Image (tube, rainbow, N blue to C red):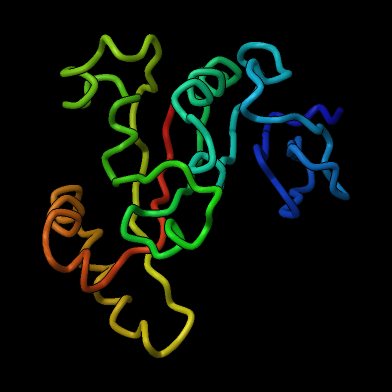
Length: 184
C-alpha cells in the first residue's frame, strides 16, 4: 500500500495518483478492495490527513461510515464529501440510492452546530467544524442556463441555502449535488 496520507474512498474509476484508492470493485488502479459498508475500514486510527468521499454516502447507512471515517482521520484532517441534493433528479433515477441529503444534514456530525446541540445523544463523535458547503446545479445544456444565477444566489450564505431549500425555487430549479468539507 502507498504511504499516502490521502484516501479516495469509493474511488470507482476516479483513480488519484499519490492517494490510497479504495473501492468495493477490483478496478485498474484500485489499491484496496473493500466493501465500505463492512466496518471497520482497514486502516489504523488517525492515518489520513484528507479523505475524499464522492458519490458514495447516498448508497449506505452513512452515520456508521462517518464514525469510522472520523476514526481514521488525523486531527485537523479534511473530509471532502459530495452527495446528491434532495431535489436532484438523480436520486430518483438511480435505484441504488438509499438516502437523500439537505445542505444541513452534516450539521448533525459537527460540534456546536444547532442540530448537534439538540441531538448530541444520537452520535458519539463529532467533527470540529464545517470548512465549506455548497449546493451545485446541473449545467450540461442550455436548458440549465438559469442555474448559474440560482447557484450564485443559493450559495450567498448559509441562510440563503436554507431559504433556497425551503421555498419554491428548489422545486423550480432543482439542485444537483451538495459539496461539503468537514474538519476533524
